[in-house]
Length: 260
Image (cartoon, rainbow, N blue to C red; front, side, top):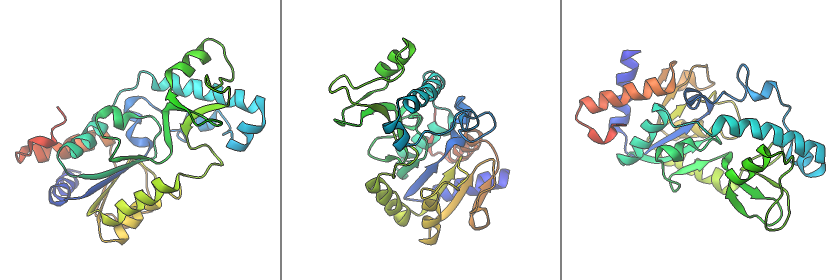
């Protein structure tokens, strides 16, 4: 592992335009269970599609029960060393962009800017009205759910509300997807962190970077379809690994990489 850490540090040191692609594995160290992992919500809640949500009051109640549990997990979650390390890359001027599959908002809490962050599946830290499009912070709806409201409605127009995320049955935002692939085509290093790289079409983004000539580093506990073409693959926790990588860079006197 030590040689892989040094190799990844060298790739970061040499790179000018890094794109980071993250999945659920980076947030497990913040206490947020992988949705599809052992004990995750996938095993306890059948996904409610956007079509079901719009058509059925019972499905809306089911949907919001699951979201209340998610918000209970998210409300006290804080960025871990992995999130902080990626924010440090932006601070150091190395980061072209961050593409995350996660909806927990921890990258932005860690310090990554909105301009350089694509939340490809949206964010749970906002709610959106499906009628008037009004977007609000999540806390007001969370409070309603805690007070017994089963299906919260928009305060402005009484339309249906949902977290500002991509639901099952909904297409990804095409502008975000196009921007993500453009970043992948222009970067010189793609870091895939905490993702199994199997959920499409987002999982094709790291592949596109590699096909365009970028180096590819993968940090995840699982196998991925791109392991065989990666320049470095590290099968260790994301936060521990990225902290070790930045420590190597710090030892070279690269102070901006510090997460302290």
